[in-house]
Length: 275
View 1: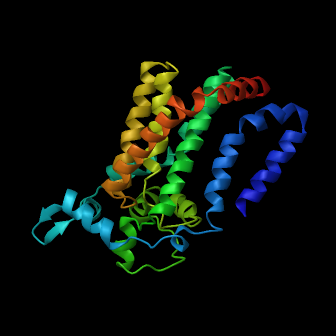
View 2 (view 1 turned 180 degrees about the horizontal axis):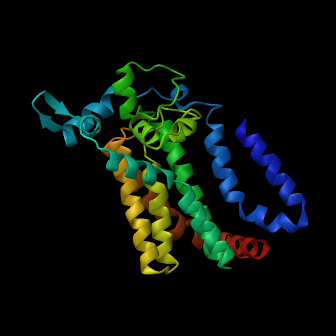
């Protein structure tokens, strides 16, 4: 498994004194990567039934677009109405999904803002863990699955680039094909963590009082990812809204409750000293 390789690399870095602090600092990100990869061991569709039709019909009812041939969900409409510029921007936004939050974390770390780095990294991890719980509570197929396979759940279905394939065609390289062929579970659309990641980064850019330009760029990318999720048929609007809600609720729990305990304050202070 990919996570085993990461753990081995992390252990080696911890064992070497010059890289020990950096390895310890990256621990929340290691836990995030291993948790995501670990879902292969117990697919969410083995815990609860897969929703393929219900969420599709809800999307059509709430956000359906009336056309001459009938009512379409937004993803279906975008499949018929797209252009090269939109395809390029969609690919750009989705490529920012993890790299920009991770880059922001590294920036905070290198600037010596250890406690803020730790708060942001733990927030990113906590939002993911809450989102993963959502995957198991309500396994759901993304729009592209319904468009390609219908409403019948087919277990072990490989991932699909869906609308992002147009970006690969545009740039002449299998950028997203190489990413989505390793998708650990296609029935993990609710909530949309694509919608969550840049929102977490934007919120902590505000909390850490970054320059207004930085906050503006983060917010722009964040909204671009929300749009791309629907444009590329990787998510329903419902998924995106639930991803935003998951982020807000998780951060409130973390910041207002968990990090205010004496144990957490002591842990954060000691951890910050060791990284």
